[in-house]
Length: 381
Image (cartoon, rainbow, N blue to C red; front, side):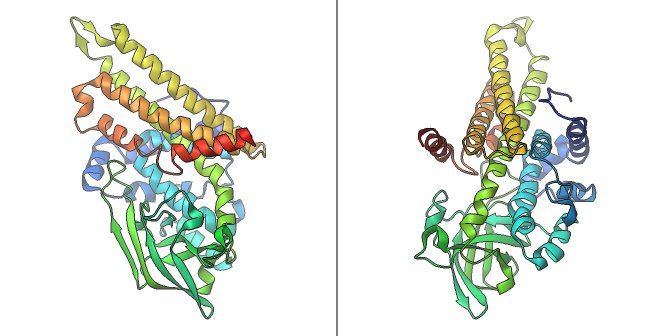
């Protein structure tokens, strides 16, 4: 499958084509449906990404990575999500949400021992921030870590933690000084096998191969070397990753849009009604026009933001715009794709799955409402 590039280099075209080819071999439709029905993590595909060296894509060369640019990463994630959103979430939770904290802010033990295990596919990660009382206002989290000599004791609850059930370590946001607001939050690296850690998979509408989880911490001992960065710097360490996160969530939604349009087009080109192909009817043809406009707009904003980041800019407003538009357009495109396919789209299968997968986009990684707050603040400041 080929689709329009936005000034992609030959290297980026190679990334796109290689990932689509590799993942379509590892995750054919039958395999995806099998994993979805079993709510099973796509470990075989994840291990292939590790064997082929893709887990190191965003990390510096001195840490065993490929030192990919922001646009390289957007191209990669768009292609990955085009094949299956579940493997995209599997990659993101370990490599981006967890591993980037080790690569950017970790100590010698984290970089020297844990990161090589991650690159080899032997260590999986997830990040634990959201809590039952809310996920958007991190400054008010209730999970506590209290000092115990040089170590810490962690207590609290997290919720909607993607892939915690398969993770070896969690990056946990906890209050180490409950009176200090944002400056009282720290990031702790928690072994999921430690005493007092209880992880319970949840039952989501979509993304069945990368499940969310409830996570409970009951007086969990956290060693001093498992503090990421410095105590009290959690907020400071999380903020630089937001532009990358929003860029990649936009890229993932753009990739899903591309797949939805293809599925609907392939089906519609074979479907007849009243003696004609349904694509001859303007009502159907215009839906494809709308779907394509939304897809192109999502991709345009995504790769524009990637170029800005690679130019050294700090496009806070633009990444929020890209994330919001791409995720909302993904949902709208999925809705129109299902309408085009009618009953065939509503039955459990690729289109219904992509519709369910798309619904989390305007919620996860910062809701559309929060993104609009970010955009408005930038406009009005």
